Length: 230
Image (tube, rainbow, N blue to C red; front, side, top):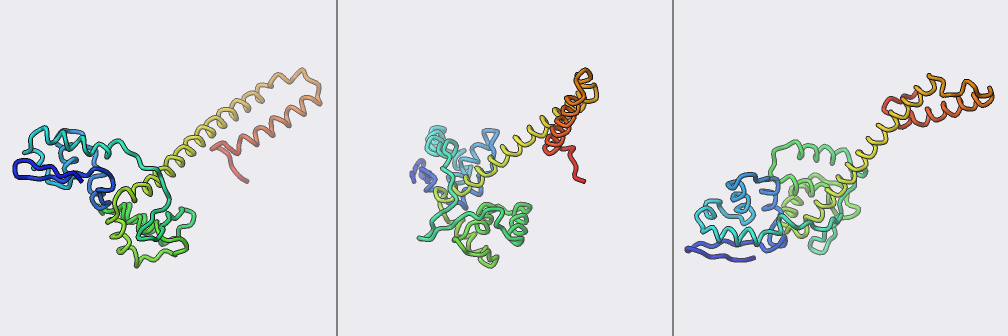
């Protein structure tokens, strides 16, 4: 921490993620300052001081603070699916292993108005290997994660974001494949309707051609959003 003193006032400035607890991070991580006033409020939240203190301080003080907390904007911790707390490893649970109770509690948090959603979700999704979900431990675990410094917690959040990015990439690729399959299927059907240039071929070649086209159509239909099952 850096202690900055001016005009009988002092501000404690974090030097890195190890100086910021998750409980403090949760208060300002969703803010997206657009105006100068909003940016001042954002910086004040990072330093855990009232925005009025910064507004009354010399402009040079504000420049010193924003330069010191530049890591908030520039750094991106390496994703990790585990964290060590008091000598015990806690692991992120994979979505295909979650119980119905976990899904219900997670959706309740997402749809709620709580200001501590990150720590509440970690309390549900991150626990020692082999431990079953116990909702009675959620409150205690939420406090535990909220008290952790961000250098330990952000890699877990980065792990979730990495999974989301990969999922989005897969969905985007799938959509592209579906569009191309639909287009190719339509072109193939039009080609067959118009004769496909096979009318002058020997009968055995025409039969083979028709069989091959039907097979192609069947394969394309598997990737088309217009496919159906009998």
